[in-house]
Length: 278
Length: 281
Image (cartoon, rainbow over all chains, first blue to last red; front, side, top):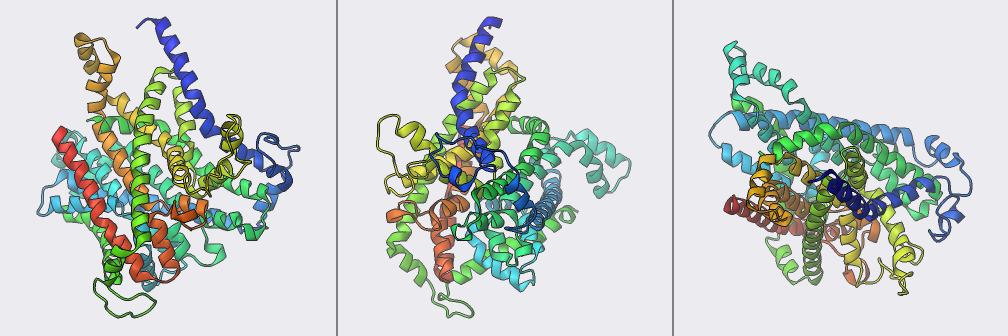
């Protein structure tokens, strides 16, 4: 294709993409601007008062000072639970994936199908029995009670099985010839697949960050709550939280995942491209 | 030896998946209520078969899931195609912008959506419906529009994410395939149909399975938008909302029976997906 034709096509694509980008972006812009609005401004028709009259940080200060929810506790809890879950899920899934990719053993197919079936059973559907079981384990109202059930993931096992299948056999041979134990072989492989480890960790972090139902059942005291729970409380009409504070909390809830994704995005995409088509 | 590597996974699988699942099945065979309940056999299931709200929830969830797949997959394919045509420098920025809703906690999304839909002052009514000279639509109250509203929310949430996966898949297709195709025909449509689409099969399969699972487990969205209810005339009642409602009134037996009854459906979906893949591979 000629260079000119390419430019024209690029411009046309941009034009067609425009409305979609707007549809995604405008609500988020409105959310961020909402931080600075008074309640009266907030409820005017969107088209007449899209921008706030004054930019003051009052609402952010109130949120951070913990006037409405113990914000830093909640933020820290969410961070701890999501990081712990992501780390656990990557560790367990990478080990299981290595076993599925590199060994043949009795019952392998059955176990693998079981892992696939895991994906298909939404945890939300079995929230109640899970909750009562977590209670029996003595983990009620503890962050561990939210973190530990989330480390089992079918998606992760399938992902890492695929990843380890693609590691060239020569690497393994080389490691084994040196007389390394199987666990050592696995550990020497890890630096080779780090983009995959990072990518899956990121995805799992995001999913854990969003989890709403399980924490809602398990965590009861106010200082143990995670962000989605605190948000639900702030949104609750009966709490009379100023709209600006709600918008500030919402914005802070998006920032960690957005930053994480922005940082890891390139590695994630190339690791996917390598895997999906082969 | 392999079991050394599988052990941690299997341990947690047993602890937090198998045991609650068995607990759920057991719960579905016992009377409603807290504490020790008597064994009632299949009573809950028989009651469900006659429960009109259950049938409604099932039908709504099915429509909702199917509609989201039918809208999202072609739209994401098209967007990925458009993104491919833009300059390399702009592409990551735009992909990221499209992905933003997928990175946002569902409760925030639902709040934003509430504002977008909300009554007469919402963005959708103000910018699109009223300028066209139509009556403002009460998206979350009018039973004719609730389900479309929920589908719209899913589309808004996941399209960018799926576009990202499809784009990654497209970039992984070796160039030689297109060069070979160009020898046969110059039609871009033919290239798309005979090279891109078959190569993307694993990605599309992933997307479809993901949306099915999400469709049957979506909680936050419907919960915040409709306040945990099914909306006017149950027009937006989804299976997971119904499970939640039953749980709230301590009808644990019924709630578990609903959950268990969905398993064969989900298994069927997986089997169909795998079967299709083997057939066409």
